Image (cartoon, rainbow over all chains, first blue to last red; front, side, top):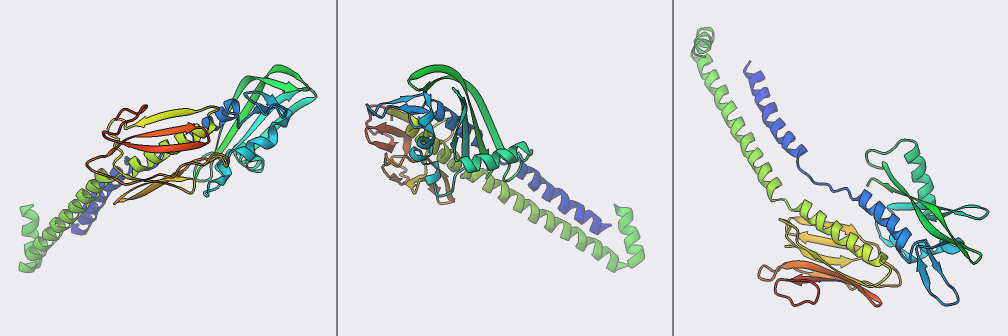
Length: 158
Length: 159
């Protein structure tokens, strides 16, 4: 009987410590903010979906053209961080002749998007995805039209 | 309680009574020990600064990333918010910002543009002149993070 009482006492006191531990905030999840930040970067920044005039050297941010693809990865150094890439994005813009897709970390986007569609969204390695549609000017062959551009950003739980 | 003790005494004699006292004492010592551990644990949790360091590291890293992404020049002042004080050591290195004190360090990555170098930052905590704001600026061909201390003169950050 005394042993049972002693064990109960230990259990109750340790439970108090464990319950207090549950309410301690140690981790901050900023994936959502960073995903939206990358999305806005692609929309508005000269390093994102921007049209570069090769003759004048001027950059028109917020204009999609078929030549945008290589620029995004080359100019922006998310991959430079030693901890490795943690975001990937895809922009889909309707162009005459069919939609064109622009990627940031294309292989990662395809892998992580697959995991997201498979339902792996929770826990370590879980995938988070945000997407938005926005009307943007799209330039091709000297003409500019307003079309809806979809941007999807995926990020992985560390 | 007295009845139980009487019964113990009757069954085991003097030995039973001392056994009960021994067990009671053991319970008290155990409870005292566990309460001391709990108080120490809660004290450490209250005094721990990892959340603050992690918060500041992520905030400043995201501000650096945003300044790189901006199409033009910008200067932004990041002030202390509420109870969050900037009483730590700061280091910008290898595309990471490190926020450190005697209890440990937190770090977070920021994004760098290969064409725009960032001026490195290395600030130590000073009790007389603590850091009260960070001035993040993208001007010309450089991005800078400058720690503004109490009393420093600045065109943008009010210290």
